[in-house]
Length: 208
Ligand SMILES: [Zn+2]
Ligand SMILES: [Zn+2]
Image 1 (cartoon, helix red, strand yellow):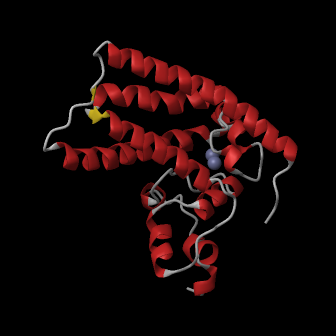
Image 2 (cartoon, helix red, strand yellow; image 1 turned 45 degrees about the horizontal axis):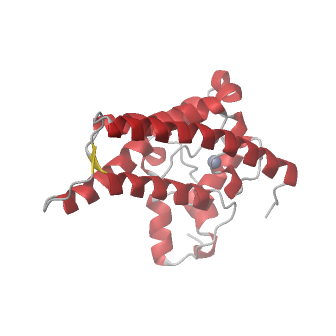
């Protein structure tokens, strides 16, 4: 496994701080709008809330995945890459510090999803926070730079349908492939998944 250099980790940390400042601004906007009663966020629980909490949680992850796929694919257009997405790829070898290492324009595009979603979809505050935690943990996981999971049947199934460290590592090596965030669905459907992913990268020990 190739190790990331300290200067590249430092650059990732600097970009992450910049991104975090913008995300903090987004959080301030959302909380101010919530206080003013302008969002569809709520804190009341009723007997229908549990199934809706699960449904809306998965629904928002699905929408974010779709949004991320297309903006990420657009970021890799030669005319946009240098201005919008180079910061995320400058380290070459991803580490958890790369997870939120975004140029400011990219941070704005990513943050606006959450600013928009609170005005469009009724969400319990706990569901909204659960989505943010899931995104954060998932981003760190997919930027580990190595595959910590075994090639058991369960891991193979997850690797087929969910994006993990190996799937996203391939994106950092091959810019024209693997644009998704959580699910492999869009990369599979739109032919941006490495045809050798399942056989050669994800599950080498299976020999399939
Ligand atoms: Zn990219
Ligand atoms: Zn990445």
